[in-house]
Amino acid sequence: MHSAQAAAGACRDEDPRFGAICGGYLGLLATPPVVLLVAWTVSRSPVVLAVTLVAALVTVGLATAWWLRSRPSLAVALGATRKRWAFIALAVGYAVAGFAQTGAVGPVGLVAVACGLFASVFGIAIAVMSHTRYAVSATTGRPELARWTASWPEREQRRRLRHGGAFAGVATVGFAVGTILESSLLQYTGQVLFPSGFVLITTGGTRTAVATDAGLEVRHPGARRFYAWDDLSGYDLDSEALVLTREWGADLRFATAEIDDVSLVEWTLAERLDDA
Image 1: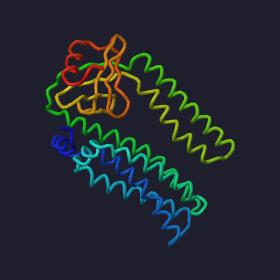
Image 2: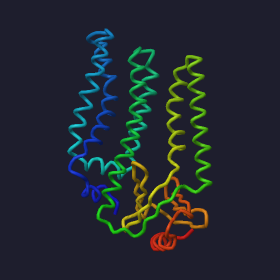
Image 3: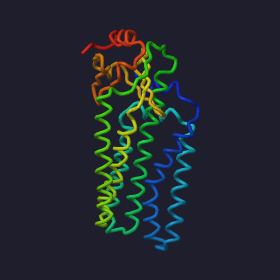
Image 4: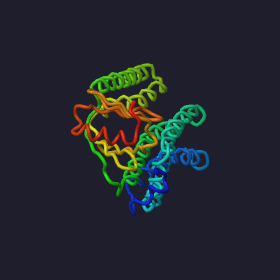
């Protein structure tokens, strides 16, 4: 019901934005090896290496963007699987490997660290954008059974703020201490942790959920998530929160008081899920 093949049928003819993001990602990862090769075989001149860096980034980025823009089904297929998160892990691992090799390859190692960190941001965008395209494709043309708009329950919002603030605080202190002690590892760790805290703090707002016969689509500002009914194991509804239990991952929580038609929502969920 939620296979990549079934979802791909509703994708658009072209997707230049996704192609551009993937181009930036691959360009960042491809650039350091090219710069290192030029430094070893041609010249170590800063000007030559800078030109090589820009040329490699632009060439790989544009070529990838051009190739992917007319293949939107690839984004849909990627968004249907958890493999989309591998792009983030690969980029972070790339940055760690670059840091570990700084002593052997010199400044190129620092370039690899920077490219890996920037690529991890692009990797997040790839994961979110590909799943958004899959969500749109999986629900296009499906009859809408129920729709509700609500924010997180108050207790959950407070928890997210605490955890997000802790992440951001630790990251800021780590970066500051790393700067004082001239520790690149602490600085880079702080730069990686801070976005996690920022995401937790800023993503506790209102979401719109749309139930269809295919599954549940949750619409965030700028992104969408799709959960097939088989991915949800049950639900619990009380005066404070509507909780949809997932087989894997964090449960979905909505403030009950903000749901307009609680009876319709409960009936729709009861037809497809077990009441916890």
